[in-house]
Length: 158
Length: 264
Image (tube, rainbow over all chains, first blue to last red; front, side):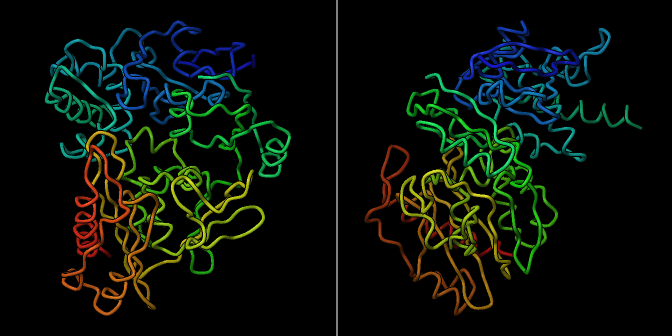
């Protein structure tokens, strides 16, 4: 057992964990944040995407001890004071989800995509969503939602 | 996953000491190959030595006409680097096509070439650009570094610190990705230098290899048409459910022509 200390959604989390504990296991089972999902557990599907020090990563493919000292944001950390994040709002408005299983990862990836690409177009969104799999929507609504959220966030920034 | 003991190295020297002091250790860089391997119980190291916090493995610089990239630099950082994009656009382009954005945020140059997966992208660039693979003790020429499937010239416990790339006049990487995994079914890196052209192929065979016939033709005339009539033998190439050896041999020609067409 080794002690890990990290910040999750602004709160300090400190736990004694097995050295082979995955970040996603720490988040779901130790911190009780079950919004982050495990879909494939083989680095393919992206349901487990969270932000570690501002970068979108697959939390099923990172050890919790690798995140020692890091600042982690999960889907639970996006809404502020009861207000959905613009990306969450856009997924609702544009039918970006159906069953909802992939949605936490989709949204965390989308926030990262918008942050890294000041001038998003549809082709870029589709390429950038390479690591997130959705089996319901056919992606149309998701792509629309990401583009709409990017526009909305630009307006807010002005 | 089997249990292991997690150790953290702050310096290259400390990493080497931890390695020496462990039964059956393995270095952990970005973990994008190693962690899935551990989950499948295909490896059971006694100790994982985290090297991703070592400061001296980070950073990209230009030094004596070479672009030197730290072994711990992520694919996303190489893809976004203004320096790499300006000096070796083919290398920045290759890094930006590895896996997906999340893998590119964690995976590192050193990790990729230390593993030397026969379908990994980076080995093609390292070999075609005639790079030097640097460790704490020595510098290994790319031509001597890749020994075959998952095999390299690295000694037990020898950690890559950086890779120094010669700056070519033009370069490009063209890959035919497996539609599911995004690994290269075939990837061809073409690099044009003042004294000749180098062509390296990944994904097609048991390890990365050069194609001397294409290199000679392109050195005389750097154009797609120079490659017409040159074919690669299917003998010894990979054959699996994704594609036969003949199919891969054909793709080598197609990818080489595509790379030459967009090289800059």
